[in-house]
Length: 113
Image (cartoon, rainbow, N blue to C red; front, side, top):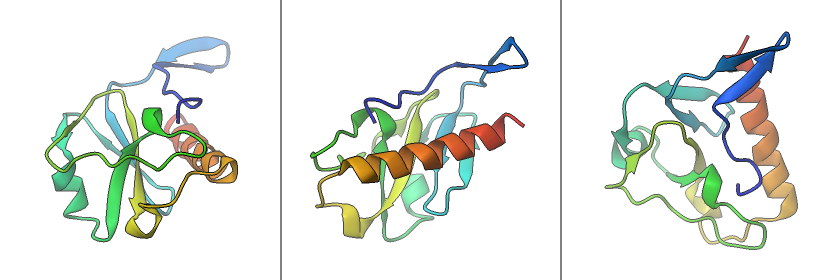
């Protein structure tokens, strides 16, 4: 989500806290899965049939949502979304992008409490 880049820092009570460098995957239901080591996309997809993975940094309004190739390693410090295959050929609207940003914010806020 070009406009929703992940940050390594967050503020809590005026103090800056460093987020652990993890792979963050936001599931369809909004739950957050964190992995401490890089992992291949296919390992996540094999547990989530009917879905594809996309990076929050490559999502833009009025563009198709780009797939993460199954053999690609997910990177530490990045946020990924699991998306239903039914959305694989749709263009991303502003409303879709906002919905995903809200879902990411809720998952990451929950992480810090």
